[in-house]
Each structure stands twice: as C-alpha cells, then as structure tokens.
Image (cartoon, rainbow, N blue to C red; front, side, top):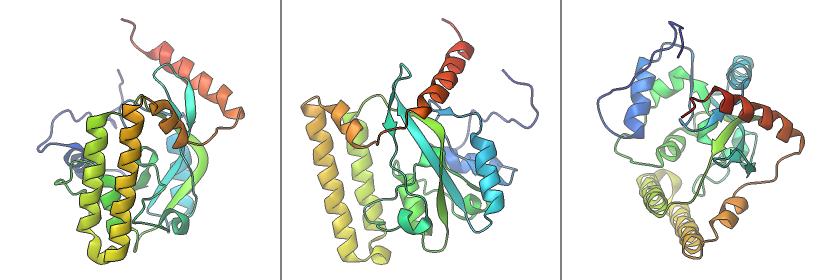
Length: 238
C-alpha cells in the first residue's frame, strides 16, 4: 500500500499486449522521464536516482540502461547481463541485436511519446523501437548494477514466439538495414533458435542461461543479499 498522490495505478486500458500497455502508460505520463521494469524484477534502491542524475548530466542521451544481475526465484544470482557502454558499441551490429537490456531502461518521456511502440508486434517490441530510432537517437549504459532480473527457465512457447517475431521485425526493417544485413540477422536468429531448442530438449537450460550471462564481482553479493532480504521481509506472508 502507499499514500503518494504522484503514484497512479492503471489497471485497465484499451488494447491488448505489452506494446499497448506501454503506450498507454506513456500517454498517461506527466513527468520528464519514463522508466521500464518488468513486474517480477527488483530495482536497486538507487536505480531511479542514478539514472535521472545521468540523464540530467547528459542532455544528448535519449535512453539509458544499466547493469543488471540475473537471479532465480530463490534469490540466488546466476550472473550478469553482458554490458557495453557507448551508443557506438550498442548499435554496432543492429541486425544481430542491441546489448541494451530493456528492463533497465530509463529515457526522456519526449523520446517515447515521439516514438510509440508498434502495437501490432506481440514481442520483440523493444528491438523494433531500437531499429527505428538508433540512427537519430543516442543510447548509453551505466556500468552500475541497478536491477535484479528474474529468470527461471527457457520456455518453448515463449522462445518460439520471440524468435519468430524477431524475424518479422528484421523483415520490416530490411530496406533500412539492407538485404544482406537482414539475411544475416535472420540466419543468426535461426541459429539462436536451434540452440534454444537443443537446450530445452536435452534439459541443459541452466547451461544456456549461464552462457548468456557473465560473471559478477564478489562485492555485489553483499549488496544483493541485503536487497533480497528486504524484499522477502516486505512480501505478504501466505
């Protein structure tokens, strides 16, 4: 519960899907910045403050991300998202993807209002947004770890939907990417899909998730443990 007039809970909106829900929140937004976060993830206490300070000091940046730890339901850390800092590194191979973890995004509200999500895309909506905007926008990533990303398992239905939609997004942008780059992106996506399927069939999903993350510094364990204890203590008991 909370008692803060600045907080508005929106539990109904027109349309369906994550893109429609995000656009609804953006249209309702009255602030200077817009932050994304999945409902089952955990923000570090300093996240909002750190990202606002960064954007305030860098008026050339439209959206910033941050480092994130990947954790299990029991709170154990599995690793960290791969991290690159500058826009040039983030957008170096757009047909391959962007190392720019969307659950950690915070950007200027004006950027999101000017570039709404495509509500016809059921997933990979953030990839589509980046492909539409990276040429005239600027993205940066803070090295600070500011979010815990909950990842339990690789689900077959979700994986198939995501990879299929990624190919659809690449085809949508084939004219701007160029046919050769688009084909490379599609081939890369199919290779990733085969790797996903193999890990699911052979029940080696833990190895797949470990492969997609990097090691975390030991100094992070104490901070994360404190945050996790606080989350557990504040959670309703059943």
